[in-house]
Length: 156
Image 1 (cartoon, rainbow, N blue to C red):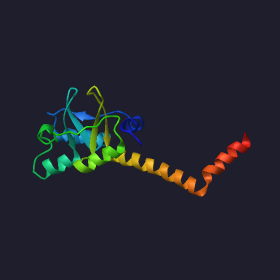
Image 2 (cartoon, rainbow, N blue to C red):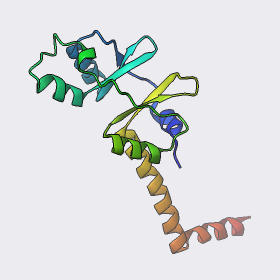
Image 3 (tube, rainbow, N blue to C red):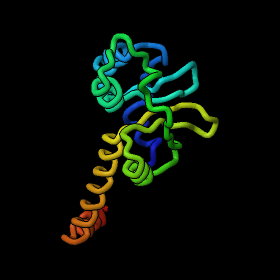
Image 4 (cartoon, rainbow, N blue to C red):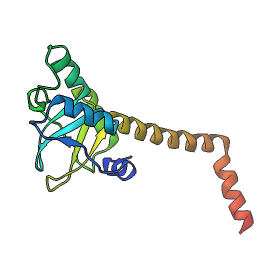
């Protein structure tokens, strides 16, 4: 089973964030520049919330607010759900599905932010796991596994 720390090893641990008093426009610019769908809203090392494309659509655009004047703190999601580096991708998928969220900050045992994973990261890891299982099953069913073992034994 793949765990969150393995995802972070592959994708990296960069976490893009924004201060709560910056404007929604500044957040959108940063998200576009980094090609990401969400930013953590932070005051120093403290996570205050998360701002996503969904927050913009629902709390700015549909409410007739202006992105150049609205501070992120007024439209961010405050209830941030996080995971530990040792949690499995299956548990992350269940959590994301149940809570209808697309991003999970990763917090280590010392309460320190060590990364951020997205639904795309989780789906990619699950697909990779399933491909490995399918390949092993196909090898087993077709006897390729035993052919490989016989070849190694014959060459020894």
